[in-house]
Amino acid sequence: MSDDRDEENGFDTTIPESLLPYDSWIEDAYRGVMLRALEHVGREGLPEGHHFYITYRTDWPGVILPSRLRAQYPHEITIVLQHQFWDLKVDEDTQTISVGLSFGGVGSTLVIPVDAVTAFADPHVRLALRFTPPEPADEEDAAPVAAEPAPVDEAAEAPGDAPSSPQVVSLAAFRKKGSGPG
Image 1 (cartoon, rainbow, N blue to C red):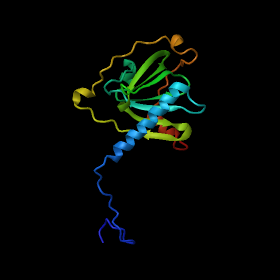
Image 2: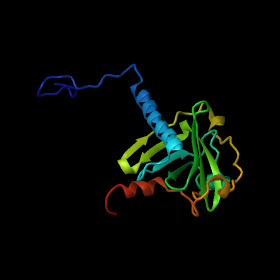
Image 3: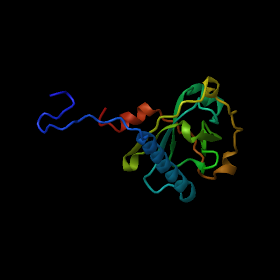
């Protein structure tokens, strides 16, 4: 028998190539789950115990990020939305997520194109989603196109919510945390 047959049952076990883009559809559905969660939290706030890790490409077109963070994280960054964020919004028309965070005591509004997101997690419920960003149309599209946002006044933007330290966590640190003792 060939390698593609189940010897015990005689069935062909080869997975046929699909002409339907199931992988793409599934990833789009998972992105939709992430966006619904972010929209919900933007309206209602985070339920107790929940927090989000969002990993995204900092070199993606349309990303707005302070230049000092872009220099520190030239390709990818993971942000944490837990206690100290404000103005979380999902813009369906522009396909962007925006959120206010404080880095080193300086408040900034980040703008993240949905396609730039590579991972989303809510450790409280052990939900972890990975995404493959689509390839930019050409090399010129891969360069950052957004300027650094102006710092915001933390007291005016988020009374009582602005953190005193950055809320940046590397994805490697997140993986170690969820993988037992070590």
